[in-house]
Image (cartoon, rainbow, N blue to C red; front, side):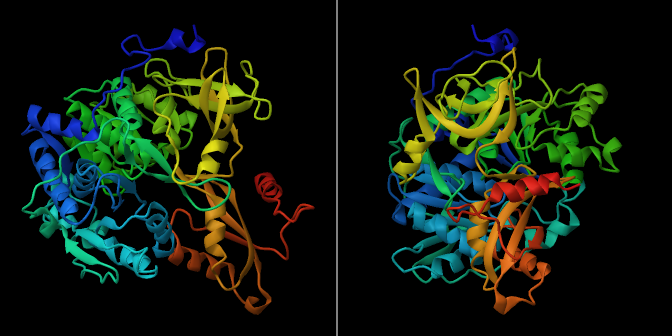
Amino acid sequence: MPAHHAFWPRRVPKSITVPATSLWHNLEVNARRYPDKAALVFLGTATSYRQLADAAERLAAHLWSSGVRRGDRVLLCMQNCPQWVVAHFAILRANAVVVPVNPMNRAQELQHYITDAQARVAITTSDLAAELAEASNGLLQAQGLRHLVVARFLDAFDPQVAGADAPPDAWRAWLAAEHALPHLASGVVRPWSEALAEEGAAPEHVVGSDDLAVLPYTSGTTGLPKGCMHPHGSLMHNAIASALWANGSSENVALAAVPMFHITGMVSVMHASLYCGATLVLMPRWDRELAGRLISRYRVTNWTNVPTMVIDLLASPAFAEYDLSSISYIGGGGAAMPQAVAQRLWEHYGLRYAEGYGLTETAAPSHSNPVDAPKQQCLGVPFIGVDARVVDPDTLQELGPGEQGEILVHGPQVFAGYWQRPDATAAAFVEVQGKRFFRTGDLGHADADGYFFLTDRLKRMINASGFKVWPAEVEALMFRHPGVAEACVIGSRDRYRGETVKAVVVLRASHAHTTEQDIIDWCRENMAAYKAPRLVQFAAALPKSATGKVMWRALQEAEVARP
C-alpha cells in the first residue's frame, strides 16, 4: 500500500469511474434538477441553472449558424463573468473546442492563439474586442477571425447595485463603459444580444468523453505557447475528483476569484461546482474588500484561491467586519502558502489551508493535501486516480523518500498531448513499468509519508502570484523592441508576488539613450501586465556558453545571491 494511503480521507474514493458523457451533459442535467436554483451570482444578479442552459443553447445555435462545426476551435477571451460560463458551455454544446485565452494578452500575443489553434471564431467582452480585432487584422485574411461575438458586462448585472455586491469604485467605469464594435477585416462582429436572439436550433450534441473539449495554452523553456489537448474525460475526471475532495454538494457556495481561463478556475472551481449543482459567486477581478463582503453575504463554503489572495484579505483594515465562519474548504496552489499565514488561519478560524499542485497538462490538481491531514509548504499527496513518482531525470530510476528528482504523473486527468506538436508530445512523456507518465519538469521529493515537496524546476519558469511566466515567450516579445539587441528574462524575489519578472538587456548602439523605464513602459504596452518585466538591468553583454547559448542559469543564480 502506498504510504500516503494511511492519510487518505476515509470518505473519498482512491479512484473514480469517469462518465462517458460530455461536460455539457453536467449542465443539461442540473438545469432539469435545479431549474430555479442560482447557478451564478455576479455583482448582485443571479442566473439560474435553467437560464444558464437556455442561454448556452441559444449561443450554440448562433455558433452553428456562423459555421462552427464539430472539433472547431473557438477563442474565449474574457474576465470572470456570466457570459464566460455561457460561452464556455455553448462552445461545448456546439460540439466545438474551447480555447481559453488570458484577457491580459495584447494583440501581438493574441495572434499566436488565433493562428496556432486555427480559430476562426472568438467570443469576448467589449473592453477587449478592439485588441482581438487588431490581432486578427494584422494577419493574412485566410488566417484571421471570420466571426467575433462581443458581450458587455452591463448585460449581466445592474450598474446601480449597492451594498455587499457593489463593485469597487475603480471598477465602475470599466464595467459600465460602452465601447463601439471594432472592425474585423476578414469577417463580421456581432453583439452578444444579437447572438442570443438566434432563431435556429443548436446542432445535435454528439461528442463524448474522448472528444477534444478544451485547448488551453502553456509554454516551456523554448518557443511560443503550446496548446494542451484535453478531451471531455480528463476535465470531467478532475471536476468530479475536485468536488469529492472538497466536500462537494448541491448546497455548496463557491467563490470564483481565480480566473476561469486558468485551468484551476475552469476545472476545480467552475466545472466542479456546476457538476454538483452548487452556486458560483463570480468576481471579475480580485479585490479583497469585495471578496470579504461576498464571503460574508453568500455564506461561501468553498474557496479555491492563490495564497496571495488570502494574505491580502487578512491584511485588510476591514477584515474584522467579515465573517468567514461558513467556509468549510479553503485551499489552492500556484505559490506556497507562508507558514505563518496558514497557522493564523488554523488558530483563529479553524481552517486548514490545503495546498495543491498541478499543471495545465494535468487539468489542475495532480496532488493535493488531505483536508484533515495537511502539511504546510507541501504539494500534498497524489490526487484521486494519480500515480506519481520521483525519478532520476537522466536514468528514470525511481528514488526513495527524501531523494530529489523529477516528478512524474500518470492518471486519467493527464492531457492527450500538445496540439500539432508531436515532437513536444513525445518529449513530454516517458514509459515506466508499462505506464505512460508525464514529465512535469519540476524537481521535488516525497517524504516517508508519501507527501510531495517541490524543491526546484527543470523547466525555466517564473511564478508571479500564481501566474506562470515563461521567460522564452517574454524574450521573444522583447526582441521586437528596436533598441533590444539581446535579452534574458529571469525571476527576482518579491515580497508580495513571491517572484517577479526581471530582464537583463543589452541595448543596440543606436539606442544608447534608452532607459530602463523606457523598456518597462514598452513591455507593459505590448504584453500582458503579469508577464511584463518590472525590473530591467542593462548589461554590456550576456554570459554565453561555448556553443553561444545564453547562460540564463548563471544570471538567475547571481540574482538569487543578491541580498
